[in-house]
Image (cartoon, rainbow, N blue to C red; front, side, top):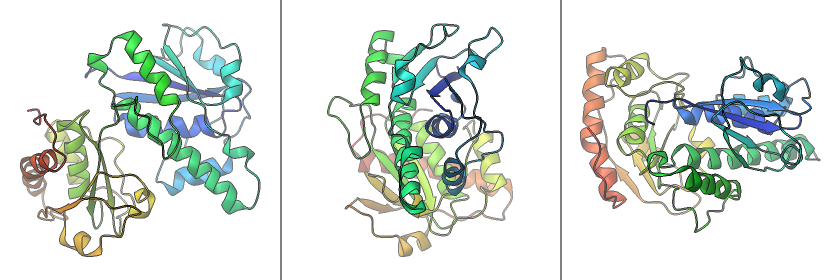
Length: 316
């Protein structure tokens, strides 16, 4: 399972808003293990402008996004799908094409943000809600313990995920791991490497995110190189502003630089925090990044295991 890449197709009627958001989210959260696609039963022919705006606001690449007919994915030369999720009720009620390979399916309905009325702020909030609801579901999905689930149990989990709403977590969904935020100033070096290391070494045990107080325009090239040199996935990394993720229900916040500790914002709800500073390798050669990478793995992983009372040790 770990070496396979799984394709996910998100379906909606117009393929202009919800399914487009889901496609982008799956690409990011999938981290190379899952690929996202989207289509519509009656495509609008263009992506909704507010969908593009909120994606760009969250540092998603929107080049190449388009509204397309679901028949594109039913032909013999189309990518073979492993999962197909409908994200609007109308598409769920329609007769879908016969998908090659018999993918697993589920309905993950989300309110249509394009139908929201009012001023631009109100309509943008509808898109933000849709993005967060889809992100919550997709982040749970990609962290499911696939290796230990047979097809029947996995199908049950897919249906349960579809019933989760923003701000809700049903007691029947034990698969949502605790969320850890790694906070730094620029979110371009240490916190990015920490996010990837936690996600890998504690896969299925934690959900790792990172953000910055004053995020840099891009992740440092040597941070990406150090992760890849250590066999860690580095695709899709991007600096994020703390304001984008501050409403997430984190279980632990880790500051990895002194400035982030001093400037740490007040979170909407109480959340445990630990400070674990690391040397800033910004502007230094790759060897410095590798040393910091190894120190993060040696110190941060056990600290998170202890703080969250996890029972599983980090893998080699």
